[in-house]
Amino acid sequence: MCGRISIDSWLSEMVRDEMKCEYSPQENMDLRPTNEVTVLLHQQACYQPLLTRWGIQPDWAKQLIINAQSETAAQKKSFRDAMANHRCLVPCSGWYEWRDEGNPRKQKYLFAHEEQRPLYIAGIWFPADEPKLVMLTTEADDQCLPYHHRMPLLIGRAQAIEWLSGQVPRASIPFAITAC
Image 1 (cartoon, helix red, strand yellow):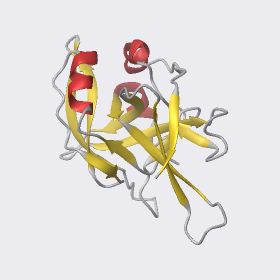
Image 2 (cartoon, helix red, strand yellow; image 1 turned 180 degrees about the horizontal axis):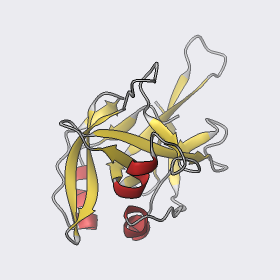
Image 3 (tube, helix red, strand yellow; image 1 turned 90 degrees about the vertical axis):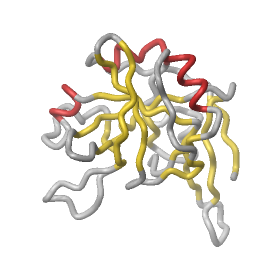
Image 4 (cartoon, helix red, strand yellow; image 1 turned 180 degrees about the vertical axis):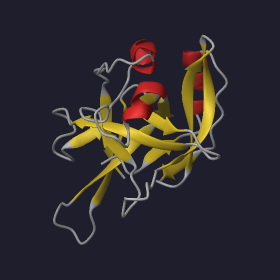
């Protein structure tokens, strides 16, 4: 779930306008775990960008951890501190899911805002020489459920401060699904 996101060329300007901050990510239509991701923090009463790398690999983990369930992350030892102290927003133009439709290859689908607006995924980051990022997921809504049982925890622009200050709002974001 949520193993790829899209950072389109139009995203920079729209995020800067909506969030009133500097934001200049590198365009990447197929951003993957281990890639760099520019996230937004809220510090000193304004949004600020932070370059992170997507995924953590604690000593005990056999593989990279890229997502955490929003419902339980605050209780899990691996995520507890980040949930309490290091929340962020991951602006993107969409995320991808794959579905087996009986073909030799799974069909890839892009989930994007139906009005071509930025999506903001809830994230937590881990301070280090190179900050690391884990995105949060939630149960899929009716529109996403046929493709995957989990989806990114989407934060509406109006709920951004709530999320960054410790609450877990859930926004109803209209999105369109396109086969790629």
